[in-house]
Length: 262
Image 1 (tube, one colour):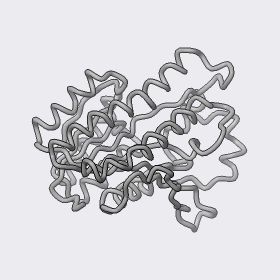
Image 2 (tube, one colour):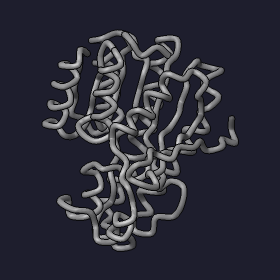
Image 3 (cartoon, rainbow, N blue to C red):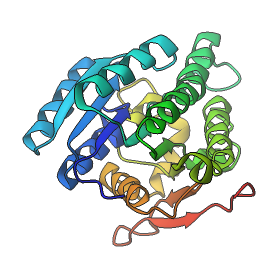
Image 4 (cartoon, one colour):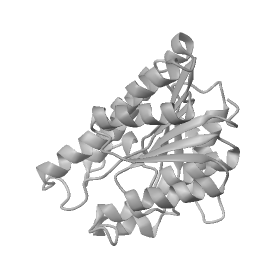
């Protein structure tokens, strides 16, 4: 896909990977980006920079687990800018402390609603929107946590495993609908998201030994992977694993998961 002149949607665009992807898309020449998040201040920062980079923007403060709010958001973007070609379902959250099995029920509910229900709603709405445009591409943000047990927060890792399943199951949409559905599975990224594992100001103590031996990825490296997927029309039902570098001089270690449904 030629990114230039296209209209994109990004959820979770107020910071981190979503914000970096918005900037990368604007730099690549998209016409406009519709951006959603619960963080209005962060959205304003992202929108201002997107406009400075030459793209139009629209922002909406929404709860992605609400089908009505997401539907209204998609409709507003399409009404304002025209046909949508790119959808990045990126909004996500984590349980934080106290860790499993003491995780509060309201946090369990919130994580499942945002990470799984919200993303599934986003895929369903994206399929309808892209159908009206004769096709396009969907990118779902999963995590390397999807690939194995995460004892401190199995709720988070379980939702990300479900994202992988949904993405792989959608591989056939490339042939039937001209819609490519793919996912990124980043390792640990140097964003404020890590702090949500703890009290919000610092990572949880259980992460200390992991962080001591991990070279963090940057949000920009993940955004580069998103743009690579968008540009490559051969990628469908693909889950791109972006592991942390082995050294500070090395780049991300990238490989594709085999898709049994492809």
